[in-house]
Image (tube, rainbow, N blue to C red; front, side, top):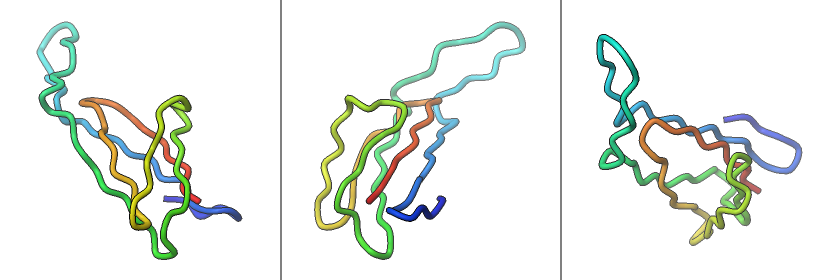
Length: 79
């Protein structure tokens, strides 16, 4: 996580669902998607995803809960 003047930047990465064969590339196993709850000491008022700006992230009780797809990256801006 990185502190900014207005909040936090939090990168989320998951290697889950990635099979590493000897040759080639296989698609991610989306049964391995992860549900994550993020909180910061001061609480969260708003949350947005830099890589998926159209994805609406709901903040409840100062926390945000979201799904990180298998083998994916999300970068959250929390205020």
